Image (cartoon, rainbow, N blue to C red; front, side, top):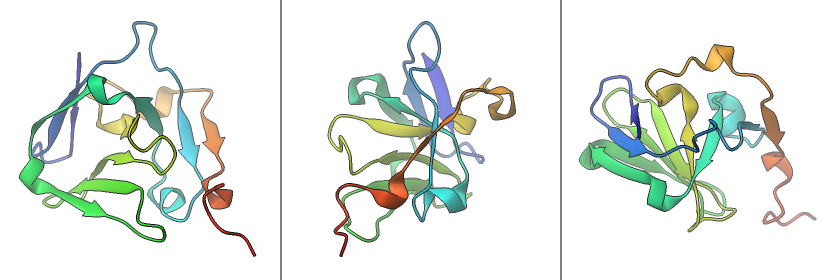
Amino acid sequence: MKNLTCHCGGVSAEIKLPAEGFEKLVRCNCSICKRKGYIMTPVNPENFKLTKGKDLLTLYQYHTKVAEHYFCSKCGIYTHTNPRSNHDKVYMINVACIEGIDPFKLNNIGVKDGANHPLDKKE
């Protein structure tokens, strides 16, 4: 198990990652993710357990109001999201919040095309 924390330590979660490391590392180019600039990895709900700070988490939603973006209301650090795609089947967690991980040393980070999400209506 790995520990995920916000900056102030008010929010923390236990996460279970595959033994060989990250399943996938991605950035997203949607309007919110490109502004955050974070690297994320998917974690199944059974491998994500919020252990502290549920009362400190603030939910942000926009556009279709399906994705749930969570951040610490005290320090402002984004910790995880429930994305529109696979909403009930995956959390996307902020890799920089995992203790012992240096996001500047990570390679092979893909880009998810959230700017052209299939659930958006295009005219």
